[in-house]
Amino acid sequence: MGLKFSLPLILVLIIITGCANTRKLTYFNDISATKGIDSLNRMPQLKIQPGDILQITITTLDKEISAIFNPNISGSSSGNGMEPGYLVDSAGYIALPVIGKINVKNKTTTAINDLVSQELDKTARNTFVSTRLVNFKISVLGDVVHPGSFRIGAERASILDALSMAGDLNITAKRDDIMIIREVNGIKTYASLNLNDSKTLSSPYYYLSNNDVIYVKPGPDRKFATSKTVQLLPAIIGVISLISTIVILNR
Image (cartoon, helix red, strand yellow):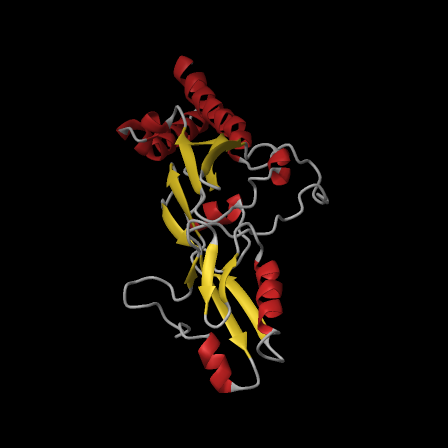
């Protein structure tokens, strides 16, 4: 009799434990509604920092004048492996042909477009300016499927975008303490994001900045999850389930 009741009981306990842990693995599990609107987190505009590389395309009706303003636009990376564009120096300046040095530190790409256009109005007419950050990248380290550095093609990327590019968190990762390391004006700042809490959606660190580092801490079950016993757990559960079925049918 003991065997008949103990095996099914073990199986039930395993299922209950798995269901209990599912909530810990679910992102933003405090959101109960299927629909909602979060108006607290307006996407911050990306601001240029020293070390950034800007691709500034200046177009005029005269192709020869356009060629003078765009000497480094080749459509591919340069021979030294760097993206073509203007490197923002340590003081926040870039040097443009004809125009000269302009300060772009802490400015958005839209503000830079306006600034360059104002300078161009002194020497040319009917100009169009387009500015793009070409070295926007983030790094994802720790307990994820594919850690590494990732290039961002747009000016917008969230913590969820970064984790998606890294293949998502491993099942053993801590979801309530994701570390974000960010450098602004030479000062490093640190923040912890809780992916189980919907308040993270309104955090100033939810949207990422250039060169942000995301570190995913391993949970206490990391070592346990890599043991031989756990790796064989699906097979063990299958055997227990089969034995339980046989015992129940032979009662």
